[in-house]
Image 1 (spheres, each protein chain N blue to C red):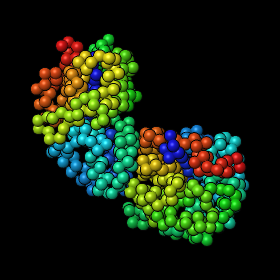
Image 2 (image 1 turned 90 degrees about the vertical axis):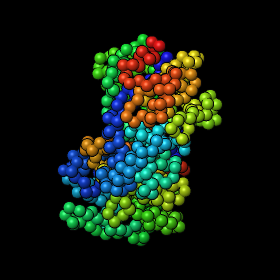
Image 3 (image 1 turned 60 degrees about the horizontal axis):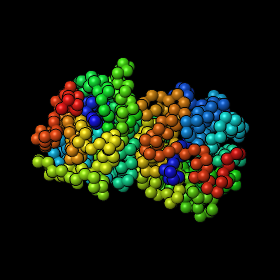
Image 4 (image 1 turned 120 degrees about the vertical axis):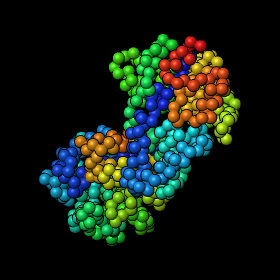
Length: 277
Length: 289
């Protein structure tokens, strides 16, 4: 079975996320009483961006846990930026209020502004997977990804089969320490913090799709090792990393060295990796 | 889902000074106002805040016009009516329509400079002192109590919130108290998340509060209110523009936009029955007047 991530894997997350980032920052500036493009807000944004890019340990935090690299896509990168702006203006100091604002409203509201920019070869790959045991497993909402698939399809109908094979809201970022269905962590050379593996909800989505088969029957392809691939790999799956400019070098090195993992330079390589091995 | 998770959506249909030249959807006549109330209700609003207009758009405190608006609305939908009481005009005129027993009426809670400054012209667009003495506030509150009207305590600054203690002490308001935070008027509190949170922190436990933002700054303020657990008000009185910058063609569009935001925030839009239970847990509101 193939489980494909979508945003960033089948699409160019940086390009399609530009309206998301622009809208998010405009709303953020207004929330702290400044206009869009305010120099002080822009300076905080630029400084935080630079700090994230320069620090391989910089991580996206969810519920107080460091669960993914910060700089791999616009949706993760915006979170520490938002925290920095809100901190500077002493806005939403209480964690639950801030989590509701950032995790729900600002993210979802501005996610709807994203455009659809497929990676080269996305349409051909998805069309070629018809008839195979392939699924889209994504953190995004199912309806959003279905919409993107229909845009990539361009009305041709070749991707219609995928509409029932999207599993959204997979919560790949959620770590549950009380769940012992996976090792607690993985250590990567070049990364001081551990990669946390106990992602129970993501595991449950994959297990349901596997329908009793083991993870050795699974291939996962994604663009963020820590979110998409680390847990399935630890449980026996084969994984393919669709690497990009933001892929941290320690992730790339780990994948290159692992016998069940591969860097996929192009989407043209996905089908063969998943089904012809 | 608890009452705290439900969002009461109010809609300010027309205001006193907006014009059809500014936005073609601004309603003037009782029928136009009632049609906008219906659109707002169908989109999710359960309370409509209403100023009366003459047929050519001038503000009026005519009891007959208010009565006509109420009748036209009730012929179309069961939305709860919230009469304005604020602005220009003798107090006697601004109070007489409360006898028509709307469910809610606005009660301005303090005085302030009320202005708009043009940075480009280095001059005021308008500039006056918005006078609401404690004598007036308590007189309005007494009239509301007499007619079983729930006061929506409109607060333009932090001191206005604290002034509710006078009404509480005099027995003129009943829990749960109903606060509105109008933000973004020059002379009042700034429309930022930090200020909204501060306002919300100052209301007594168990109160309901809502945010009211002016112009396009309204939308981030609505996000802040939804994230902080508050209620929201939209409507052509406050803002003509949808979140994407397009001019709204009806109050219903503005209500639909904020209802969509509420769902994104993981909250549900309060139904009419929810709203009645939340604001009048004893069931004694003016629902059928």
